[in-house]
Length: 117
Image (tube, rainbow, N blue to C red; front, side, top):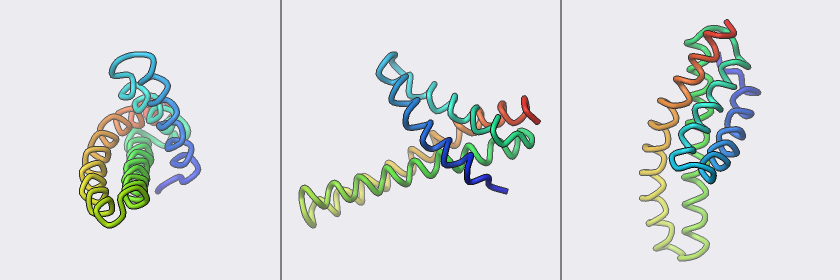
């Protein structure tokens, strides 16, 4: 079952930590995603599978929000052509972000859930 409080906190943490570590070190955004997943897993704490599931939902939510913002930004700046370009880029971003977040945040969530549970 999804713990929506942990998912929302994980989503916010994934944005903040990815940005923070990404500006400090090269490849730091991956570390930020892993740490955010670990925190979600610790918050849920009902075993590795539940921690991984909640962390993956938080990561997928972040990818979907990023795609929506790309489509809105493309539409505002370039009109219909921007909408079409934003939709194409947004689709690629969603697929890549979901796969990346599922792996990184899922592993962190599994470790955090296993530690707590």
